[in-house]
Image (cartoon, rainbow over all chains, first blue to last red; front, side, top):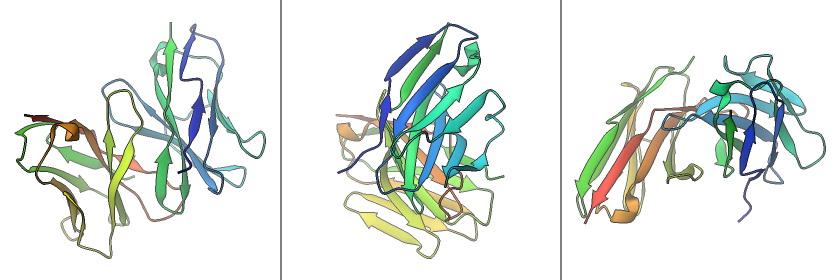
Length: 111
Length: 113
């Protein structure tokens, strides 16, 4: 069964640094998403992406965040200048219509 | 925007008992309601979902019920087993791809043998 994949599994960065989290969605899916989960809390929606455009974004997704589909398979989340509070698990997801499939996550630790 | 409330936050049952987790949602336009199971350090896994044209759906030991009038839906697990222990999240969405899936805060289910 095809799965969403993410790299790296764990990223440690210093405050103020830029990070790029990478995802490979399921190949025939057209809708892509980023979610985050702070330790012990619920999964929070960040952004959705379709046809090379942002479809919807939450209040969390401010100017520090950006998304890109640089080629036919990858989907990336960039955080320009990381803050301590960006430490979380970041999940990529893709969907066919309205069934979401999540990747294994990237644990981001900002020190 | 949509807001999903989930109760209880923790639930402890004995193996073989039933477990029920309840969620309410605020946006009457929501019509897709999935449930995810998340084991420690792993991705959320879809276990069952229901759409608004259906009142109940069952898959072996798992069932979900939906009351659109009251805006609440519930997950029922029968004959619980220790491997059912995990965090369970309900979620709600308008049935359109590209829109946000809004999660509840999760229920930590512990099944003791």
